[in-house]
Length: 454
Image 1: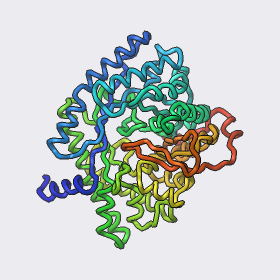
Image 2: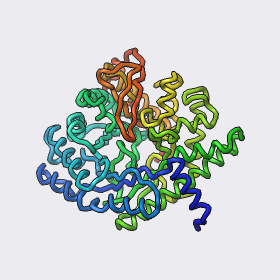
Image 3: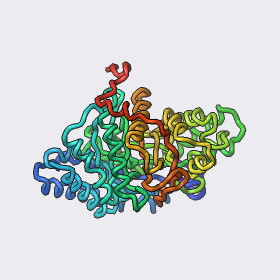
Image 4: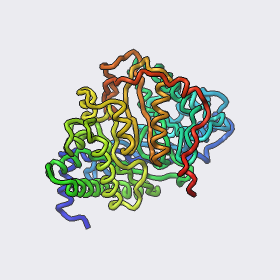
């Protein structure tokens, strides 16, 4: 039972501590839309999305008004488009027309973003996979709401280094295509190792082929709530610290569970998972870096940062899984630079480097996220950064990702502006030594020995 004290406590979290439901994401299967005729395929996709999602935004808005819980985004994810377009698409521009259709459908139903312009190539690329990947720069340039993700590796299959090399080139091309807008298309493009197929968070969301025809997934947030709770136990030992994080994560996740169940009921669509990640925003007081400082660091990046982040991530998961039977997605702590004012401050203070961020990704929920680098960074260097991150995910049996923005025309010390939830980012230096010979080898890094568990 929910008592009056809990209601008042939740209201205070919402009003003073930036608690929100970051997204309701409706996953939609497009498998029944497949057709060898491109025109018919696009029509099928548009009709399916606009039919299934026609009431999504209204339901989200109604829940927001009725319960007083801010729901920041309403989003859609679809089956990876490389699969859906394989029979009809003969060139990259054919795939780009599907991106146009997704964008039009997203605008028609009023959602913020639509994910699933994706390919899963952890072991190898089909012709359709490669065509979709090569279409990404043009597709993201000419659409507003489409997000793209590519899974390049997994613990079971190893790392597709041909795909890693290609994505380094594609990311640079995508940056160049929107250089007049601070290369912002790259913020809608992410590469993964061990991508979950029930992820509600963009840019990595897609609707997995093991999912139902449609499903409701919810992503919650609440770094400000955790930071405020920890400020009340300042100086206490680690046992008290951990208990405080767990209890707070439980409360935050219960809010997400309520919204997910209610959205499922109103839309008559099955509830999938709650992703209990601490997803920061540029708003003051809504920062994961500030939590690390509250734990006892002068800045994110100081000695002890990786240990503090590991503790935070684990306690968030422990508290959250008690609040919902269906926890999934990424779940834990995100460490994007541009979306977290505390991370931005740490970079500008010289406390946080790309190498330290990489170390932190060993224990966080995602990876190198929303990081701006100089526009003259070589494609092979970007591929090397991706390969390092894929290796962390593969060996540690966890999800890792890279969302990097080569800021064309910008140098270290400059900044790029994205606006809204995406914030702004200082341009960070990249190690200048070459990895060309490594990236150019081609082929696949084999799966680690522990992948043979069945």
